[in-house]
Picture 1 (cartoon, helix red, strand yellow):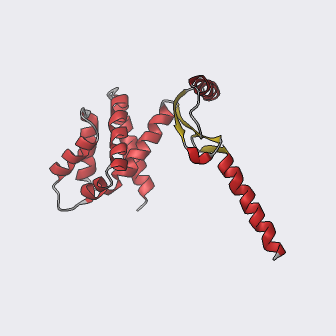
Picture 2: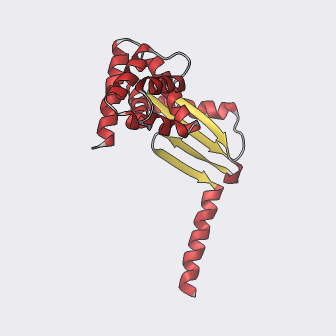
Length: 184
C-alpha cells in the first residue's frame, strides 16, 4: 500500500470539494491548524490511531485540533477518513492538501534565517523579488539564529542557500581534516 497515493487521493478529493463550495481558504485554515496541532501535540497521532476509541470521539478530537470553526467540508472529510479507516494516513493527507492548495493558489513559502535581526525594508525587498520572480504571492517568515555567527540561510520551496559563516567554518574544518589525514 502506497501512503503517497492514498494521501494524495484524499487530499485531492478534499480540495475538489472545497473548490466546489468556494470554501478552500477556510478548509486550508482548518488543515493548517491541524498540521500545527500534530507538531505541537505528538500524542495526537497516537490518539487518532487508537483502535479503542470510537469514530465519534476521534472525529471530535480531530475537529477540535483543526480549530474553533471547522468547515462542513472538513468535517465531512474527517468522517470519510474515519469510515474508510484511513486515519493513520491523516497527517500525510494534511501535508498533501497544503502542497496542492499552495500550488493551486500560486503561493510560495519562503524563510530567511539570520544571525541578527534584519530590517523590515530588507525583508520587503526580498519578498518583492520573490513575488516578481514567481508571479504569485509569498508566505515569508524570518528567524534569528545566533549560532549562524553571521550571514544568512534563505529557503524557498525546495531551494536552500546557506551563506552562513557557521557553514563556511564547517567546510574549512572539513577541508583541514581531509588534508591532515594525508599527512599522517
